[in-house]
Length: 314
Image (cartoon, rainbow, N blue to C red):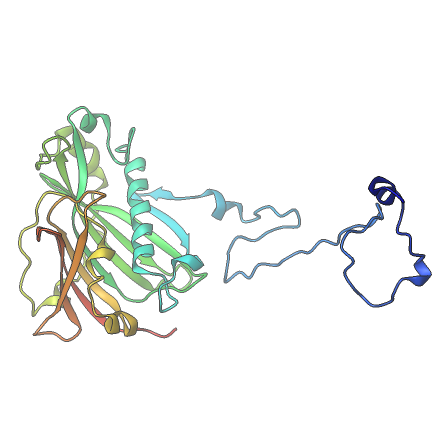
């Protein structure tokens, strides 16, 4: 009886003339000269702007290496809308678009020399235990991009005060120049140990003032002209904007999309805290909601006001 090693050391024992003519898969092929065919896939430019050459390397060198550029104190950066960034309407989610603005804001700090040894924390701040926290955010959305679209983000410093630094971002379609979204975020300076509001050091103000540009004021007041003004914000950071609108009725989230948002952070929130998102419809304006994000004991963490519209069909 032949051993396993003897069987594996000889070619198939069935003569070629006896082999069946049908195309079937027989598993392992013993012939050493059989070559596996290769397959080349051409990527659609709409799905991915990274064009591959015959070697499989990225040919569009400028898009691949120029992560961001800083021109006249404005950071400009392109982002590709990925499949995993889509929402239930098959458009880029609000969270994904806000992540783009956060990325460019940090790059703005790096370009201005503020990011030394941390995310926007230079040595003048770290030596005094000072950090930036976000206190207020305003968002106006004209339209949401789809999968494969390129989003051009411009971010600049629009204001610098005693305690606050305001970063503004404008998202556009680079092909058409159409405005997609505008975001204004107020960052507060606090003491990391005492968690209290602190004045911005003069060295930081002197370094940041040349970057202040009033390029495109945010026309958000008319979106809520019939609504009461929100209370003054606290100095502590809380949670992401997406948590604030989760209490919106499911029917609204399924059939509508956010058009404008005002979010104010009231208190700091830890990783292990359990949050509740509460929402109530406005009595004066249709498709407008007020939101509260609270801890289990009822302590307020953040409040928001949102305006919704029927989802757009591209």
